[in-house]
Length: 439
Image 1: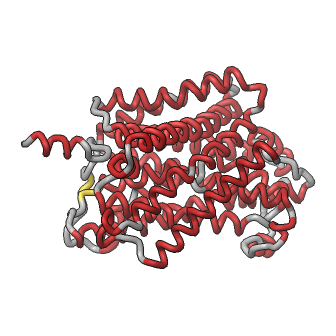
Image 2 (image 1 turned 135 degrees about the horizontal axis):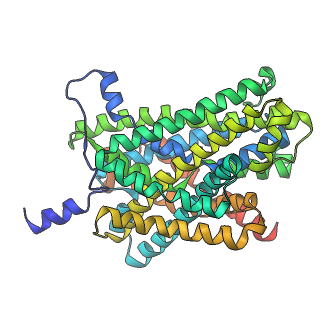
Image 3 (image 1 turned 30 degrees about the vertical axis):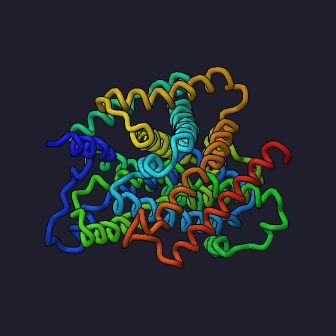
């Protein structure tokens, strides 16, 4: 093997798992779909993480079912952006971090890498805090100790990936199933009013006249579309051993997109269920100020008349937080390797990327706990929202570039849609920043 070939092999995204999952040749549609299924669920985790819970709870408690249409629109935007991310990975053989490294000058690359690391820290802050809150609610474990316990996921990732990437996907899908079952039960217990619920999917003009409703709606959008998922998805789709020719890549894009749509519809169900439960239990009982996870936990038992509601809620939160830390750790590795092209053994890479997230989260818990855990979750979503354009804009530019994408370049309608989404995200973030400092 030549030196050049060695370097190219080393630059493969998630090299230890790259092309490790076989795609059966000549198999039926269903068998191929099952073989390609998995990456979409890793991405779906980020759309139902603890950071989403606070905005969904606040939206349901304050405005009933009225903001369900915002969750629907956010999910459609998420599907479009994730389609672009998977297409970039399959068409170019590079993840988003590697594409930034190859296309931007060094100062821009370093700036984007620093932004991405801040994004991972903020993302992990929400996920770790969510897991720590769940451990505290269920077992009365102090938050700081709960944060340390969540760090054990790095050992789980090492063990699972040593067995094969499919094992990691299986654990994540099982945890997603747990969350969906939990909120299915919560919906049964909360008994929402179906006609009013369905009406919530119809856009309301009140969102433009009620500043508080608009602010929470923007918060839901900001919490739903997660920037780290764009890096993650562009990498994990390459774990499939599809043919790297034009026909093989087109098939991979088709099946990966179906996988993504199915998985993100599951995330849509979870986010909608949180808002519906909050509306049914809190809004129509006069508790319109509920926004904190721990307060929701305390109120579910007396309002629904069974402790099962609170226990299931906390178990779903624990599954959500731990699931998100698994994918967050994986994304940290992808970002560090992609931007910096570092070459080191897998266990050391994971420990470094995990510490970069855990240490700031632990410091915030120890020194700013009086600030309020709920406010820390909201702060993490603001930071993530600010980081979003630094992932979305490069993604849209790369996938709209004929030189970069070839036959997979965005078609005109998709290019226009993607740029409109990117513009809206930039404007949204400018509005959030303005309100953060001057509102």
